[in-house]
Amino acid sequence: MNQILCIALALLVGLLSSRLMKFLRLPNVTGYLIAGIIFGPFVLGKYIGGWDEGKLNAVKWISEIALGFIAFTIGTSFRKTSLQAVGKRVIIITLFEALGGAILTIIGLFIVKIFLGDQLPVSIILTLGAIACATAPAATLMVIRQYQARGPVVSTLIPVVAFDDAVALITFAVLFALSKGFASNGSVSAVEILLIPLIEILGSLILGTILGFLVTLGCKFFKSRANRMIMVICAILIIVGLSMLCTENHWQIMGANLSFSPLLGCMMIGAIFINFRSDAMRTIDRVDQFTPPLYMLFFVISGASLDITIFGSDSALVVVVIALVYIISRSAGKYLGAFSSAKITNSEPTVQKFLGFTLLPQAGVAIGLATTANQELSHLGLEKQSSMILAVILTATIIYELLGPVITKISLEKAGEIPTSAN
Image (cartoon, rainbow, N blue to C red; front, side, top):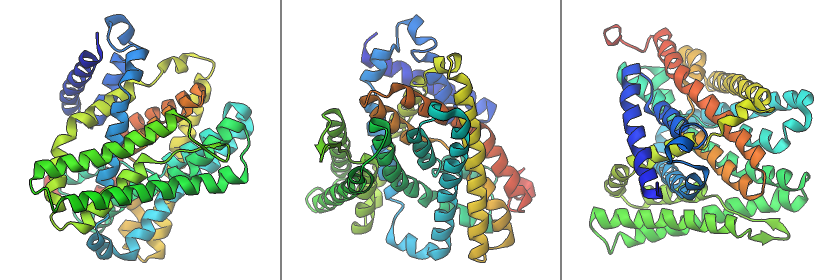
């Protein structure tokens, strides 16, 4: 089976899984992941002549492009008027709950490292800590819409989940740059700790800003939504393509591997475009119509990338322990961060008590960051570490996507924000 037929198979199984998830009342992303695992090279793929590891690696560029569009969409939520409207309260809550999840995850994993030793490298701890920041807005918003929830918790929750993933992208850019230094050398120099992450972050933001302004300027010459959509797609592909070129060719500065974040770059394109074009939403709506099959492929490929043989190896117990600690410590960090910041900002008692429980779901951006880590660490020859990170995040994602919406519904019911007629 060639690559095109493999992509067609991925779309087909993803589409069929969405019907099954609707019957089971579970998020579609859960179905996409499970379908990818089942039809991937580590389960049925090797028997049906479809997804072997070679073909899977050959189409992973689709995941890179999908991540670019996810980051662009996050950037478009940074409209200046929206930031002014939500005020300092939401920004403080977002920083506390996102970084709270990261900090407690890192602390929890360092405690586990005392017992596991070299089986849990520092690079994995820092990477998982950064990914812990992210929250999946889709599952949460689905519950809000389905049950017509309204009230202080919901009005705080919606802007928080919009800004949450941006904090995750920036945190990931910093911590993963450090992780690569630890992973490749076992120790890091001052250049790798300070200069390389700074160059990576600033370079990504500057490149995204330049392309964002070029897209904005191009709108003066191209008036149709189709042409403007093509400009946006072109800018995203430039960022993603340059990032892949940089990683594949091992560009270096002062002896250290240099890369830049396509996530930060594409996020900046979205932020510049939404703030400097009053009619930007017309183009963004057209881009949103283009992306659903891309996102479906992204989740199916992510599921197919999960090497489930790791659960039958000597590392199985280690992966399970790390996943459990990740889930518990991240959940505790999210809750404590939301509770303390809501208290500090004098938010309503229901916000203080229940907001943290609604921030547990994790999917798209978390899987995207894990995929980025998987691919970049694989380029460094660290397949075992990259497989472990992806296994932990996909395991946690499936659990979060199964339990997260249920916990969100119960929390909103306890807060009195779901009408009795909606149940």
